[in-house]
Length: 637
Image 1: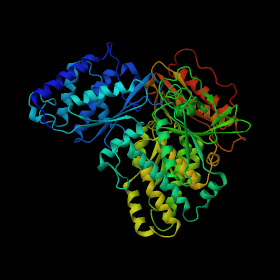
Image 2: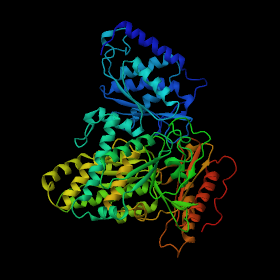
Image 3: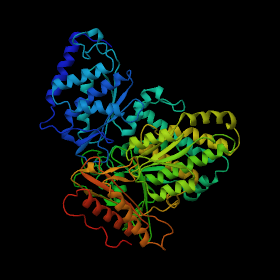
Image 4: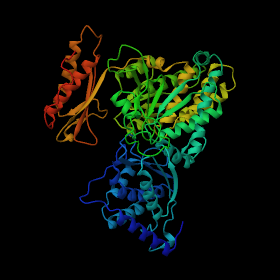
C-alpha cells in the first residue's frame, strides 16, 4: 500500500506524540519477554504497549503480511497486574527470533532510539527503502501488508492498553482487527485461522469468536455422537443410569465465564443427546480476579475454589464480596485468561494424604491436574489408533506424551506401563514441551501439571486419516467409529496453544464415551505425594541443570548431596515400599533470585522431609539468603 508524503508526515508526528506521552521511566528497568510474555504491574505497561504495537506491525510485514496477534492479559496473576502475549501467524507463541526484536524495541528508551530500531528492523526484513514511514519516498513506503489482531481480558485497564497498541500499529499503516474481550486461546485461534495456509485441510476456516464457538460446539457434538454407534453401550448405559452430567465451571471471575455461558446456551439450543450441562460460576465482577478461585489457586494450593455470589452486573472488582466453599460432584477451574484447566470433585471419606487433595468441611477434595488430563487423552487416542491398526492401518504412527520434571512419577509410570505410550521429558516451559511434542510424535500430547496443554497432529496422522477413509469409511465396524473419532479431534483440539475450553470439552467427551465418572477417571492411578518450595539465593545463575532440569550439574557437590538424601529416604522405607520411589530436583527460577524445589516420596511426610532437606542443602551450598529454611516436618518417614 502506498501513502502520500503528507500522510507519512502525519503518521510520524502522531507516533512521536504517542511516544512522548508514554515515556519509559527513569531509571529504566530492563523489560524481558518470557513464556508469559511481558508481565508487570499495569501502570508499567503503557510505554511497552506503544512499542509492541509497532513491533507487531513490523512482524506482520516481515512475514509477508500474514496476520499476527497481541493479547492483553496477565493470565492467573492478580487483577492489578497485566501483560502482553504475542502470537505468530501459526497461532503459536512468538518465535525466539521475534522475541529478540520485541525486547529490543520494548527497551528503546528515547523517541530517537525507537525510530532507529523501527528503521533497522524494516531494513533487515527488506523494505526497498530505509524509510518505513514514507517521509522521504512515499511511493516506496509501506509496500508490505500488515495485519494485527488484538484481544484483551476483563481487567479494568486492558481496554486502554489495547488501544495504545492499536494506535501505534496504525502509525505504520497496519490494519487492526479488534476482537474485544476474548480468551487468550480465542485470540490465537483467530490469528491461525486468519492465515489459512497454516491450517490442515481437516479444520474449517473460522477466523473469529463466533467461528471458534461453532467449531468447538459442532466438534464436541460430533465426537459424543459416536457413542450411538456399534457396541459403545458404556456411554449410553451410563447416561440412562445417571442422567445428564452437570459440569460446574469456575471462571476465576475472568473472561472464561462469559465464554462458558455462551457455550452452555449453544448446547441447550442444540439439544445434544448425552451432552454435558455446563454450569458456570465466578463471573467478572462477582469477586476479585483469580482471588481464591481459578486453576492456579486450585492446582497450586490443592483446595477447592471459592464461589462468589453473583454480582448481577458482570462488572466491577468484587471488592468486599466474600466467597464460600461449595462441594462439587464434577467441576473444572479455568485460569484468568482461560488457557489452563484442572478438574476436581469432593467425596466423603476419611481424608487425604495430601498427594492430590485435602479435607474440607464437605469431605475430601480431589484434584485431577494436567498429568491426569494427559493420561486420559493419550489412553483414548491410543485405543482409537489400535482399532485402525487392527485393520492394518497406522501401525507406524507414534503417539506419546511430553512431560516436564514436574510431572508426577505415578503418571509417568502409568503411561509407560498401562497405556503403552512413549514419554519424552522436556525442559519446563510451554515453548519447550510444544516443540518436543511436534518433533517427537505423530500424535503428541502435552499437559503441564498446571493444566496448560494440547494435542499436536503431524502430516503423517492426516495421511492416515485419508487412507482410512478409503478402507473403513461406511463400514459397519469399530474401525469406522475410530476413524470418525480421530477425524474430529483436530477440530476440537486447539493445536495453536493450550485452551481451557477446548480441553474441557475433550475431557468431558472422552469420559462420556468411556461411560466413566470423574471418580472412575481419578482411579486410574494414585499420585505420588509431593511437595514444592523455593529458597532465596544471592545469585540463581550459580545453579545449573541438565537440559531436562532433572539433575543439577552445578555446583558440582549439589546433585551428589541430593542423591544421598533420596537414598537415605528410600533406605528408611525399605521393606515398606518395593523399590526406590523418592525423587527430587531443583531448578533456578526464571523471574527471581530463588531456586525451586520439587520432591516426591511414597508418603507425604517423606516428600515434606525430602523437600526440607533439599532446601537446606541449597541454602548451604548455593549462597542462601537469610536464615536457613525451617523443616516442613521433623520425621523423614
